[in-house]
Image (cartoon, rainbow, N blue to C red; front, side, top):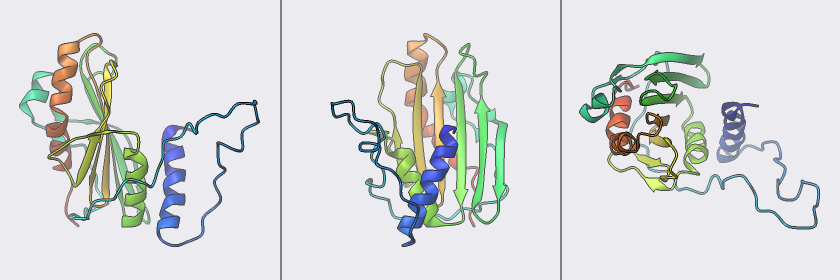
Length: 204
């Protein structure tokens, strides 16, 4: 299964739980593995434990399009204009999603990718948000109702997640390979890039 399929399955279970419906049992990965004589920590991040922020927006789920990025700092890194659609889904009873990319994606220049999802169910959006943001420890202030970014691990890439009502943004920012200065500039521009992305949403 791909990461997105796994996320979708977890969201479905979590949304059913939050709505008060019985969902399928999920095996405890700590106890269902064969015993090796030593205990091992659960490799999955803890989910459904981060407080969900108050809902301040409700967005239209249909007609998603790639955002137009205008931030000057991002533009200086070559991240500008309307993103290129790489994938999209349209499930009217559940919600829609779209994947967009700015930049070449091959390490020769800065690249930003976005997975934007909107849900017809706020419970579904809440469940997806808790799973999406669970492993991101650093608050990303000034954008959305809640946002986080990954810690700096020395990699050329970082991840940010933004929540706004029934919409969730999964943003991957990758600097030119080996460009430490560019990576710092991309991290500094993350909140402004995310704010530009939110500008593509249409109120319901």
